[in-house]
Image (cartoon, protein in one colour):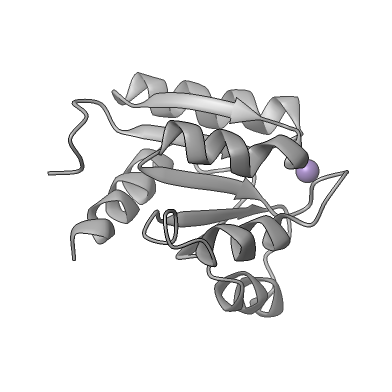
Length: 130
Ligand code: MN
């Protein structure tokens, strides 16, 4: 079981309209609920208030480094159990290593693969019960 909620709640931090819409539409079509912000200053507070089941973070935000947000979440005992999936337009090994070092549980290259993405998210949702 994913959580007490019937539908998993996914929180997306993304400042690109195209990538946001693609991710959100795919997740909603697969029975998930989605909350979103493009404002890094509001993200952690909104996550504290909404307690999502998984967080997707665009690591290259205009106003912040998404990995700093990941570190903040993983450093917060109330939030550190929530799986974080990094989204990046860059696919180098170093980018993935940096994301994992910042506490991200998984790393997905944008644009997401429409066929694989919902399963990738579902797989990461499962990890919080392990
Ligand atoms: Mn971006």
